[in-house]
Image (tube, rainbow, N blue to C red; front, side, top):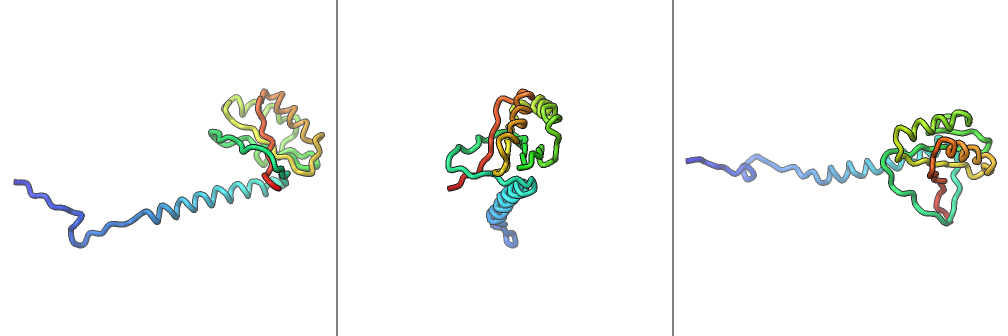
Length: 139
């Protein structure tokens, strides 16, 4: 005869409720994702314009390629300064490796369109067919 014992009711054995710990970890993950996005916006030195209209960007797989444009015409590729002449080659290389990548242009609110136009031309020359012009939703 086999003797079975129920371990859940054994004296001295306790169960640990991990639900609160999971809640705390999820809150920390969300917090660090938000802080990371804010740090990216502040590190580039680009003040994004506000608009009352627009649609949220669709969810994409992977991180987007982000081009920042400062008012004086300085161009940043993922936070690093880059010469506008090298931009088409860099973009075509990145989009050839992963074709589903999104391209976001974050132009400063004080940048004239004449400063942003060469960036759009470089994206076109690199074969990019869709570009997201990033704004903040405001009043």
